[in-house]
Image (cartoon, rainbow, N blue to C red; front, side, top):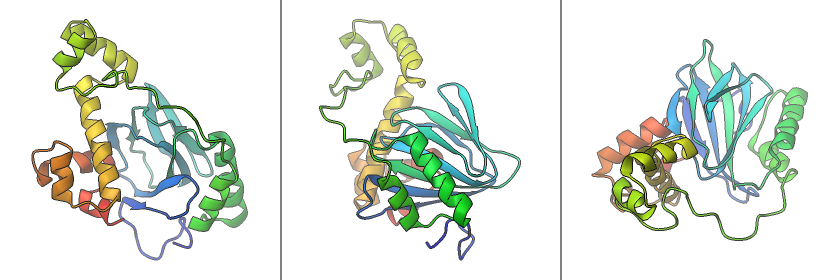
Length: 237
């Protein structure tokens, strides 16, 4: 992948690449096409989208965010968001990085300077620029999710009872806090766990069973809707 702006073959809309020794970059996603809309979802990693052509449009916490060529958008880990289609073809790159590891505005500015100067972005460029904008690593435990309170749960009713609330009241408060209803949040958590296992090369059928999906087909339908690719293509990335 010498340059992302011009590639040797017409790529599919979504492609994912997993680096080694990347200094905090967990994954790279490349997006090219018209149909780039995805429903509400979130990631365990920070997402930084840098646009090479067209306009990338997101709804993040109810607000519309747009970026054109040479601009970027930062979506913190755990933030529900959805992407929208535009009138023109989009070409962009998504960096998925360890939460809080990079100074996002400075990283976007660094990518923009390199892109304006050279007209492209290669994988060595991305890793070098990302490493130039590290924060000091976070210390201490991760905060417990407001969804579970740090405990396993089987249903929204169980979670509501532990919180001392009615099911309806708990659901309303949860959606206000997280931007998605409890069941949607739980599904996305399972999909993010599947994403992690697939990156590690686990068999798709085993991943489906381990993350609570009925079967491989059920996982495939939900995974493609959330991330734009099938589990098989994602695993092979």
